[in-house]
Amino acid sequence: MTRKREVDATVIVPSYRGVDRLPLLLDSLAAQKSGTPPFEVIVVVDGVDDGSVALLENESRLDLRSIVFPENRGRVGALNAGFEAARGDVLIRCDDDLVVPPDYVAVHVEAHTSSGTVGVVGPTRDIHVPSRYARAYGEDAASRSFAHVLSRPSAERWRLWAASCSVTRETWESIGIYDDRYKGYGWEDVDYGYRLHAAGLPIEVVEAATAEHHGPARTARVRAVKAFEAGGARATFRRLHPEAPIGSPAAGDGLWGAAVRLTASSMQCRRAVERRAGWVDRMLPLVPTPVGRKLVALAVEGAGLAGAKRSDDDGGRPR
Image 1 (cartoon, rainbow, N blue to C red):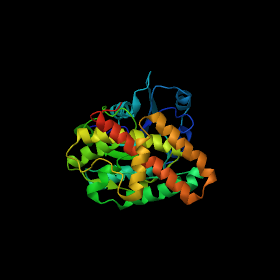
Image 2 (cartoon, one colour):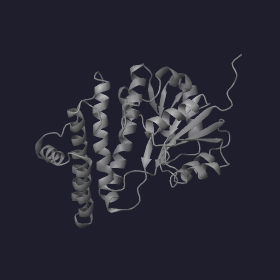
Image 3 (cartoon, one colour):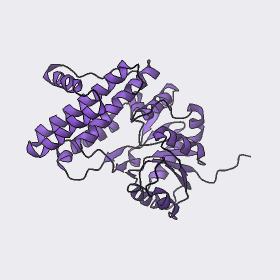
Image 4 (cartoon, rainbow, N blue to C red):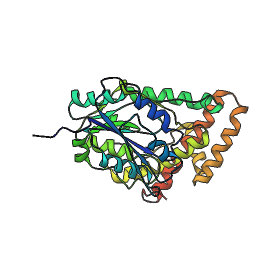
């Protein structure tokens, strides 16, 4: 006879300097509705104890364990450690800057119970604090991104694998760990989604599991740096999966494409990205909102193109 597990689900939370973000997530997990299947939470503190360890030790509302790395190993290392330590049958990856709905765990478990062997994506909705950046770019980008997630056809949903998603333990053991060749920001999730897709496993987007994302970029500088690093990670993905239907980023045609290419040419390193996008942040209070939106978009698209080109020139390896 197969022994029933003590918990039905495990929520795995990778966390780096998360002491200010974790309380909101833990509050929302502690507020799961009555009748939620038994679940545990594993928080992996990734090498910097900013007070997170004490916060987690004092958490008494949840079946919670923590794994504390003595040094920073990156998100891939944190995810793999959390998944390997999990006891549940349904393994839910949840970033530390999310606030989840009261039926979050139940919805993930039910999706796997009713749909068979699938990967489940829970959409996230960016929550912006009022600012010039939010008005010019952040809120509009968040709205378009959320609509994009909900509209993707089944063949493209692997590209949505990200901050809130789940698989069964059986699937995890079949697909394997997150790939540790992704060293910087981004694309280790997309890589995992693609491996699910390549194995023939459907990916479902479950709107009922939508979580609030309280950690989006707050400035053009931060957003552009993420785009630069993600551009490099995209090149790594293309090197590892040359058969995947995704090409090198392109600036496009016309005046806008020329402007993006020119911007990218001035962003040969992270410091240059920070300088260029920092200038955009200083301009936002001085220009109309539509102009500010174009300036931020130019910095973000240029940074993504520059990051991908730099990594392509180095054989797809981050530098």
